[in-house]
Image (cartoon, rainbow over all chains, first blue to last red; front, side):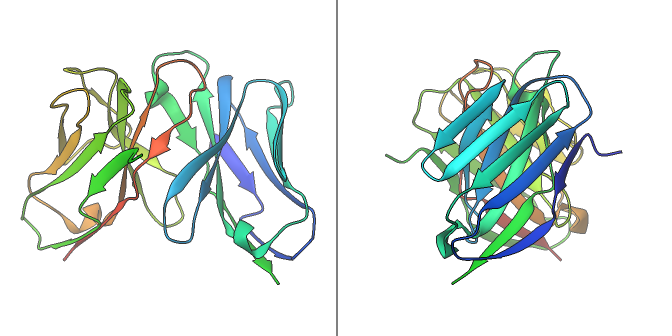
Length: 112
Length: 113
């Protein structure tokens, strides 16, 4: 059983569309990360959430701790948003970030 | 502003050969990590180091060794490469506090034939 599930696995959108990527987890966590992996392979951190909502430019991330669910929204999507978006959770029992569990990623393609 | 530098970018090995992947960070982070990424799977932790001189096994440590040479550098060694180790390898670093962002290297694409 995967402890971190992302949906959808693949997503194709038209430029300008509002996009939602979901992440559900089955364990107690202390933090949740959203990462972006570019087509060239590089990975960058987008957000860290432990509660509520964060916004950066056209990206919005929310988390509902009770429901064990997080969403990443992209407003006014653009072809340069095409990437794989990865959810990762830090387990609640602490320790270093060696106990991050990663989802398999959602591959987003935004068509012009 | 180099961040996390990982070398090489590509490598092809024959079964049984050895190699070392190098990683260095210039952000003064204590924590460093090695992950592998395989098709259809999430990133999986191979080893991590919470500070200079300490290392711990992650989810998939078999077939690998690591060395935290100093605060900047964390290397991953394959002593006898196997085709199952064909993967993309990422080094990352972070500060220790909960939720601190991970900073990734650009990855090494390794093929073992």
